[in-house]
Image (cartoon, rainbow over all chains, first blue to last red):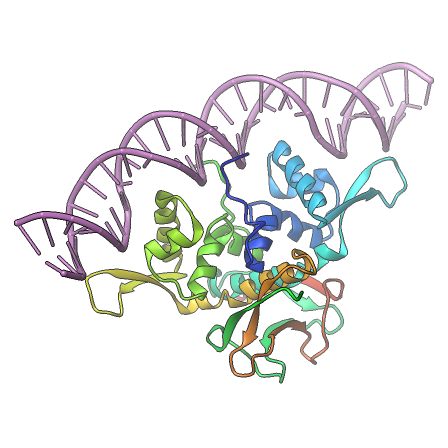
Length: 150
Length: 150
DNA sequence: AGTGTTGGTTTAATAATGCAACCAATCTTG
DNA sequence: CAAGATTGGTTGCATTATTAAACCAACACT
């Protein structure tokens, strides 16, 4: 595996994230995991992914600490894939992707799914704010380099 | 291009988003665009991507409405790639990816970059809230199916 | 007018992906 | 508890995507 450039060493946090979950299938697997799927066969059926590819993706997701392989809750010898705490931290990524899709990738008359607060049934909101609570857009931000403290 | 399954028809908004920007390079190009890069050569140099692939990715990003090709600000005959309004709506996705990376993909002593509010110099926050302002995690949400209204 | 830069295209080699067949271990049913 | 079905893969081959390098036309600069 020489070809595809690895971003592991990149100082940009987004690039590192993409290095881990930036391929075509990984985020779809994670989405299904958020939807409650846990078994190899469930992912395979839901995504229509080739089984060897699924095997490899699950393996790297486990190796990255996003999924873990635990004994199934029914107590059998079979295993299931579950989101770790780190995996659950991908929630904002999923919500952001979902909201972008909702906003731009559906026809007005087309039906789609919606993410709602279980308690109230109302849609959830994602926003980016400054420390003082102001809503912030891309033009009001800068990227600064934090040097390691020695 | 027959092989890779298209998710265009999927009812899940996240899947549709991934269909548009879910390949390996597109989000990195978008990240660079947020960082102010506009020219073919700038992207190519920044990413180290093969030029033919960059050509194709830029073409599809333009076709999807995320980038647009406009005459360069200096007035020459050359063109530059700029984020559209739709493209700028990917900001939350970039911020979410960045924060995931900051949290999980750097050693404590390693230096990295940080996204800050230009006005205050303080880091920006991304949160997911219910309508009443409560912070919401993955387990407090459900996905509901909105049927098209007829 | 000549030279370098920009923004590509083309070609050939290599890597990733898909697909179908196969297989061992588990689970279910009689 | 044996027989068949299901689960969770692995293997090999065909197809597709990506890369690297060479090439090229249009512009910009002097």
